[in-house]
Image (tube, rainbow, N blue to C red; front, side, top):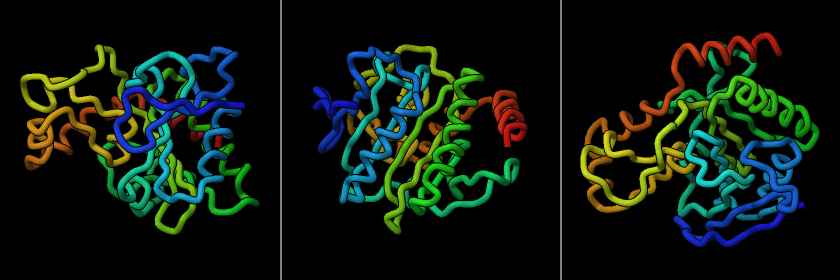
Amino acid sequence: MGVVLANVSPFTFGHSLLVPDPPKLFNQVIRKPSLELALGSLLHSADNLLCLGFNSLLAYASVNHLHYHLWYSMAPLHSATCPLVTKPALPAFMELRQHCVDNFVFEFASISEYKATLEHLWRVIESCQQLKIAHNLFAARNGQGVLRVVLWPRRSVLKAKAVGPAPGTVTSRGYNVAVAELAGMMLVADEATCAALRQEGALAAVLMNERLPDAELAELYSLLANRS
């Protein structure tokens, strides 16, 4: 059971919150039933531009109650349509061919494979939770209409969330890279920030700054390899 709440500070058309089991007062940690509810919401929609996102604690979650973001993108986002390749370090998993931040991709191509794919996805989420690795999750339909889920293990954010315009470069002034930005939808507070992000190399630098440190990524890969 869940409810959909209109967001009082929407960043685009239809931006709302999917809140699973509100009376249970869950904190902002993905649980498997809530994940199934969230993915089911997308599967029941006929609109290929409906997107779903989740920001864990220390990954720009704005509040500590369990919620997923729902919104409509104006066009298919990069992470929904980018071609996939096998992860070199973990051949059992796929990743986006072009993205600055390490990621895992899962596609729900058929009903018969739904449970197996869900378990594969859950293994990565559970491993991130076990190792206390911050993460962002994005789901949308790919170019062929197949449900795609992308999970980014990323660095933990220990500072307050930046709100509104701020002085300095786009990387130094606290630009927030959460699930929408990782998916390819860059939300900006003003024209100056937009212009800064359009400078050569700026966007790549901002995204690279969100990468999980190598030692933590190696620990995650090792745990997943042992669980395969």
